[in-house]
Image (cartoon, rainbow, N blue to C red; front, side, top):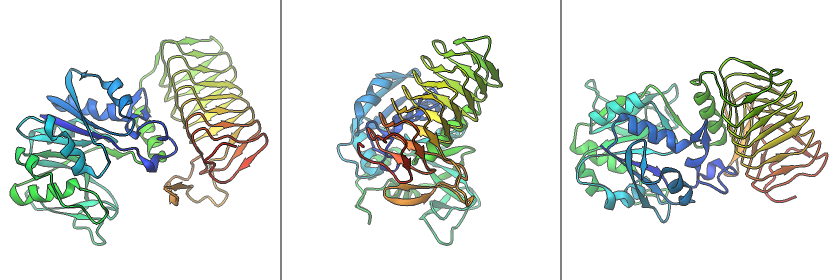
Length: 399
């Protein structure tokens, strides 16, 4: 089954982490987010993968090349991001005649469900949620056939929501020229509506799905990944270090004396931890990142080259590439009123749904010594703070 993976968008809700790379290339564990989607597609039986690219496309092309996981890879360029149907339309010239699957490149799926989806075409992936109102919701008859998709209903017809996984019949390639929606985009759900009119479209239940659109969801995706790791120590670990539980230390990583790492945790190649550091709570220390003397990192993602050198605390946070925290930088991750932490997304205060959440820091941002960062603060790419600064609002520009 030929498979189209949508990976053209910038991911504005993920800012500042996407200021210098596309959202699908943000790391989840030891590989990019979109690679997990491609892995699931390959395992499910994809015969060809077509990656629809746009924003910062070169990074995607360099990672996947012409073949991935034994599956041929082709590319289609979406010059302007004008919706999901427009993205699939961009791929039409490289699709063969026949049915095809469409997947979101920023969603995580379980491969078993995708395998069932591939064999059941025409079909769509459905995931059961407690509150379906923010989603597209399927109305499904007793035989498991979808009769309607209702977008963000006040009175949902079911608790099964659309997860952006579609197995379309060949005829759908001719139905991609849909009308522009009220929000100015060309929507793949309009194509699905046509397919539902013409075919019996089955709802395939997905046991696991995670849409990764906002920074705390990237943290959740890495938590999900770390739940599956087993202890595997190949790097250089000092005899005075204490690794507890499922800890992965890749070849080329160094763990110094006095360090305690409580798994699950991943310390990637080239990273250094310690001396006398404490890493815990589902943490990823990226390639060539540094966790230095007397630093505590809890439940966080440090991307490649990020440095937290001395006497600092980082909790429930996401640090971009080559971030540098000055000595004594401390992150708050809990509100005094014990309410969920809020984060500004596209300018609007948004509930993260997390009681504990720290900061989001864009690539190459820097903090001065003894900086204090309040819960829910964002530092933009290349931003900087001064020595002793207390930051309670987002910082988007150079200091």
